[in-house]
Length: 429
View (tube, rainbow, N blue to C red):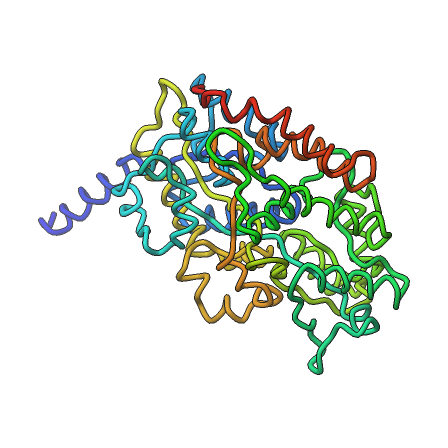
């Protein structure tokens, strides 16, 4: 036999007998539901189809405190997932409590990502005591939606058919009043039921920030008279009938999509519902979206961010191979986050967020400037998405909108129940 043929046969034999590289399986826990959940599942499917080295298997859990309670418990006993979607407003609680492991600069570099490719504000929120504990995915803010048909009848549109600039709390109140008086529709809508309504908390924080009034200083609440005045202003919108009392989240969004309210105060996550309704031909009006107006000193608006974090998993820390597989997935999602942006979110990954395609994406371009004015929940283990501070706020503040409590009473009850949180040591799980 010719020596060359012998070498080829040996090479083929060795190749066929060599074991294939094992696929690394990554378990993801997600709190993303609805349209967000569908988009994340699509991105996971795309990632899995794009390569064979890593396979991501996703489990969606109930949003809010049930998700965080399960994540904390599972990580402590070493039974948590390999990666989880979290709110960056909870990093202080999760990282400080030992639930998450930091992401090192080397791990980020090996994935092909760089810290300077992310917006500094979001990267800062993903950090705790000088270490990074998550890779930011997005920014989602409170915005103002408006019905162009109703706004036009109320004289609130300019010559181009866009909302006339609203400056000041009096002007915003007048806009709601004009819709009500001139069209018969509700001036605005937002969730306000006594069952876990977070909208008033987000709006109230925005109003405090616009007045440069700190919610908390040290270990005490300092919102004072300004906080009471802000809540009283919103309560007055409901008392005067500019907004319907007692609507839960679904009812409030349905009221706007059904064309029965001129404005809606809500997060950008409702964009997919409007886009879908328009595509189906069931939305009976043209709509617009603007950043939350400057009601007081500036245009601060509440926001939060999703990010990917790696659970510490107690005494069973993930092997480096698993971490690198997780980071490969995170890098893929970051670079393809234009798909995530179609859900209304603003990507945290700057090469995508500042791309021509993103700048042209509608309706996102209408409110893209809101990234400049975002404010988060206060720092503290008790704060953040579905944290105990938000839970207390959702328990008492909506009662001021329904008239069950005065603004002063609602805030006093919220402060009384929450004061113990400010002096309680941060938990170590």
